[in-house]
Image 1: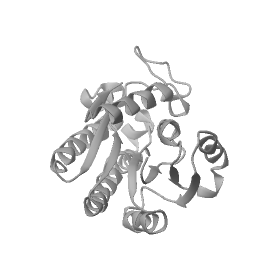
Image 2 (image 1 turned 30 degrees about the horizontal axis):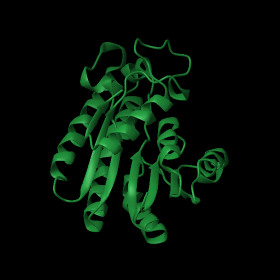
Image 3 (image 1 turned 180 degrees about the horizontal axis):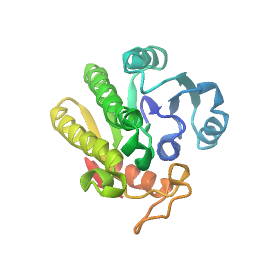
Length: 221
């Protein structure tokens, strides 16, 4: 990779799996809350061939600080080759139905914070004239269902926003890859009954890598 790989959501299993597939010979920046507690992800990225791994403090929900974090990353580590936007919460549907604050927190993280950071990223990457953004929507957002409609509605909004942004970036030198996984077996869904056609973070990462290589703008997993 020519440039820095930035993972927004540096603990995400899917985000890290993507970063490991891109790490060989590259500089990787992990952005997450409690950035000093990322020893294991850093070790795995170095084992995957990253030339350097850096950590920055990043709270996706603090939308007022997002641009400052992005500008600092570019100033310190150079142009961004790939930005993997991998933060998010599954939340608790039953709680969200009776707790308005919890429902709003889910929507804020899974939609509002994404709208903010994607808008900032589009500006940053347009200015450098290159770069790829990887965004994770969900099958749950394409057909919102009773079982997880709060999460699904946030993903539906994100899916529409990212699709429109991808069109808006045409001709700018910047590319957006929209990824729609189904049920992913991992830490985020631990204790839940896997749905049919489930995948793993590794399978999602392989699909992302295939899309990056083939030039696809959308990929279903």
